[in-house]
Image (tube, rainbow, N blue to C red; front, side, top):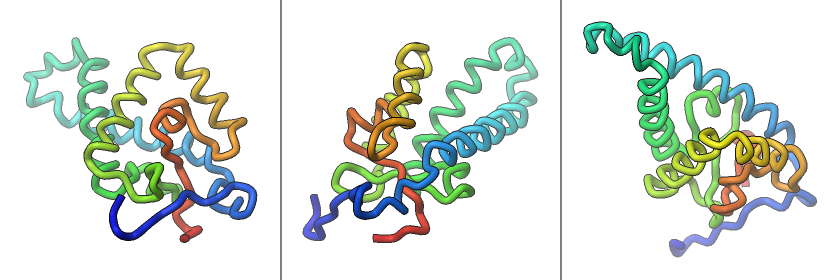
Length: 149
C-alpha cells in the first residue's frame, strides 16, 4: 500500500457506491462483448479470413487482451466506463497491471466452468458489496464511479 491509505466504501453507510452495480456489470459485459466481436471482425482480413474457423478462440484472446489493457489503464473496461462503474482493489486503489491480469485470469476461469460462473453471478446478487467470485478471492469491488470517496 502507498503512503496514501484507502479503504473500500462500506455498503451499509455508503450504499450509493453499490447501487445497481450487478445490472450495470451485465450491461457493461454486453457492451464489451459487442466491442470485442467488432474488433475480431476487423482482424479477420489480417488472418486471410482463416480466423473465421477459430473465431471463438480469437474472441477469447482478443477479449483477454482487451480486459487486461482497459482494466489496467483506468480500472474499468470501456463498457464499465459507459455505465459508470469501476473496479477497486482491496486497498481501495484502482487496478494496476497485476491486479488487472489476475482479475482477467479469474474471470476467464469462471467462464471456462459454468458452475463457477453461476456462483459468481449469485454472489454478485446476494453479497453485501455485490462482488463476483474473482472479486471475493481478490478482495476487489466494482463501484459506481459517480459516487466518489
